[in-house]
Length: 117
Image 1 (tube, rainbow, N blue to C red):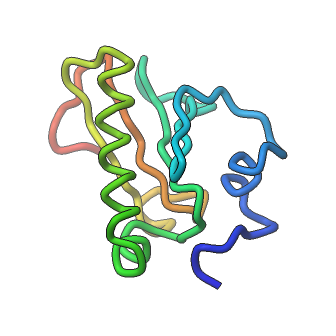
Image 2: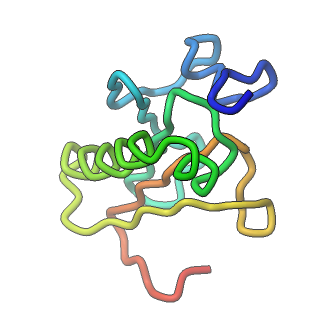
């Protein structure tokens, strides 16, 4: 069922405390933690505690939770003292998504040229 924890999901296990992560912020609805393979000096993932496979499914089912995710991305960037940052939400393996629990990458601390990739 959408929103319910998935036994085989790495990020659901982080939310449950079953897998360690360097948590930088936690709210009632989200968890933010450092990426284990950072692509920038600041690279934090912000995830909803509820399981949704991607941003579109989250927004369709729970738009207020999607808004929480983006708000928290901004809060994390401020906490990390990022003057400029990028929020990336990958959808599908072809776009680089490797964990199918929606997550926002907060990237900062180096030049972030456009277009990416």
